[in-house]
Image (cartoon, rainbow, N blue to C red; front, top):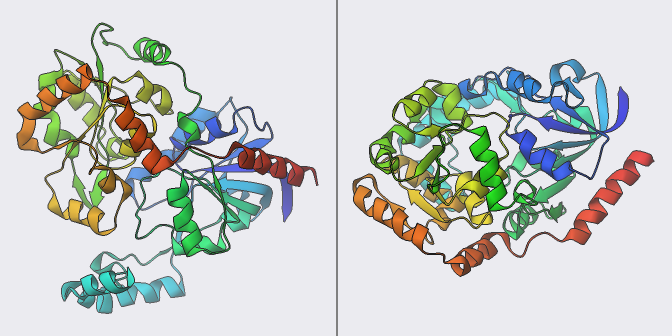
Length: 407
């Protein structure tokens, strides 16, 4: 198999372009984009390859994964581990039989809770929701050296990192000591490098960021504060929980006084494309731009409204004023608490509101915009991200990559 002497970046979601390109900016001009064009059963992944191609075509070199798999290799590959080839094998079918029989019994009898507490795994294999196919990494097939790129600090302290990564990645890039220590505890010989959060570094000033957003998005009143609402995508065992429509009756009350800029999660838009027109009809300003520079978007906000997931950690890193909205689904909350997700821990330090606290929420937003407790926000960022990456380690890392390409 022919090996190409280049750095390849495996892209599975359009939003990953922003993550990677800010990292590689001014550091390497010898990389190529590999577009993950696999067919997935998950509906929210449909159309990803088409969207990625539209964003990169004519701007940078790219190839389709299906065209090079088993034919070409690249010297070095960066991946977020989101590309998984779905196929039925003998072992995957045996796991499926176990899941729908023994696994279902373990789940039904609630023995899964005992196993989860004792060994950190429920041993259900997915139970009745198990799939016949297995999910397989392809990184080692298309590259000699594979480097995992972090996709956010919204991680499960109980389940991170995934065990199957051990034999896939040679090096792990990390956002902070938090994910770095979890990887080192699971893979004792893993090489980890703290890179901070490159997509949110070297961003323009708040004023410049606002100018960019004002010019790019219609119907924003520059005289009003910008409230950035970042509802996450919430999905459990095929049940789609719409945390957007849950809160619209309350948040619509803010439209007259503030610019309420909503960016629905890309997965939400994939499953419910009408969500954008629904929000616009209610009077919201909606950002649905694919490939949006999220650093600029967060920087333009005077306050962020979030609920769960990565937007919380992004706001903490950006040191933004932040208020959290709770879901009414106790099953989802319990699921995140049991797996000890990072954003659940952050909620201990940030004011949160339930759906019946609408008036209190409105008052708290007013209060937050009047005050500026930057010291507390600095402490919160320090708690989860530390003092930042070691730039000497990062410089050495890129030096070694270039050296490998030149050998």
